[in-house]
Length: 360
Image (tube, rainbow, N blue to C red; front, side, top):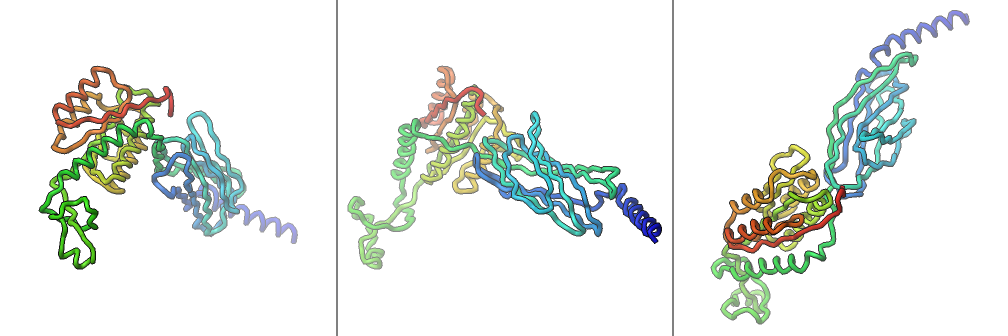
């Protein structure tokens, strides 16, 4: 009886081995997801990996290797099916590895809380599934192409050194915009303060409101600004500060509700369409397009400062201000800036940044 039992057990083992041999990865699939596309430096985001076993047989051993950004810092939240998990940094390559088992028709999900310490565009490019047969005599592996990216924005910096000049420049734009109000186009009404001329009082509106109300006029033209970001001639540290200053400038223009365009010679580290010029706009979507480009930008340039200023001059129009963010300029460079001022009839506000060589 015992001999018959051993023979039966061997037959079952041989059948399972035959079924699993060469088919241990059949039907297995893995997916990788990131819970956001854009994050701040050091901000925590979720990196989720799911493995599905749709078969009726268990997977007793599965080794999963993911290629992740080199500077990724991660902490495992966990799943009971995960036996081992480790993040390894070797040279320019980092891998996130886990060993797990899957019961029939089971999905195992592992969530990592991760951070990235610096600005840039970071990509998850693929993973490898490695499993063995029933008896562990052979192993098979398969690679799955994965493309998930996250963009880390340039950090905000203290703008105190630029505040006097920048604040005055925005004030000039606001004053000019107020002066150009059109007495024909009424945008709304507001309370009378005593400083407005009496001819602006709306008597019908005042009667309805029970207090003096004056007309609030629209404007004859929409004053705009062009933010020009130059990285030509800068070291890595200066380029990084240029990206941060550009972010702060665009956010201030949003706060002041000043319509603006964006022009740069920075090279972008992705093929996401044209980014060197973004037309006039205002609002979250407009700002987001610029910020994603600043996060993805490389420490490289496409055209010189001279060519960049020529592009800015080609888009000149009345009542447009120019804000140039740049590394230190020489006397020859400043002459090109002055030429842009002569051609457009507008003053160019130059914000010069300094950085640390080799900064990332």
